[in-house]
Image 1 (cartoon, rainbow, N blue to C red):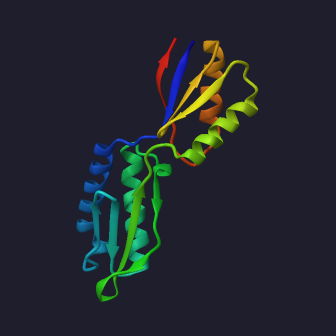
Image 2: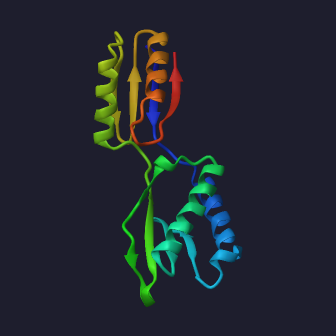
Image 3: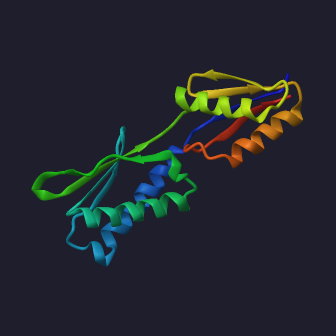
Length: 162
C-alpha cells in the first residue's frame, strides 16, 4: 500500500547561516551604530536584543529577510513577548518550531477526512504524520490539497513509497 510522511522540519545549518548574516549586517549597518543590537542562536531559539522596542523591530525585520533568503519558512518561527533587559534594553526570544504537534496532527487528519478521498487514512507518529492509501493518485491529490491549505506550520513530504 503506498504511503508517505508529512513532517515539519527546518534546516538548522541554514538558520545558523541566516543568524550569522543578520548579526553581521546589524553590526555594520549605519542605523544600528551605537545601539549595541545583537542576534544570538541558542539551544532554545534565537535571542534578539537592542536598546529599545523600535530598534528591536528593525532587528526582527533584518532576521526575517535573511531567513527568507536562506529558504527557511517564517511559519517555523514564533516570537515571544518583548521583555525588559538590563539598563532599559529590550530583549525577545524567537522560538524555532520543529515537528507536528498532536493538535496539528489531528487538524491535518480532519482536513484529510473532509477531502473525501477513498481509502486514504492517517496515523500520528510522534512529530510526524504517516498517510497511506490504496491508490497512488489519491495520495498525490492529498499532497496537492495539503500544499494549498495553510496549517500555520511549514510542511514537507518525505518517504513516498509505492
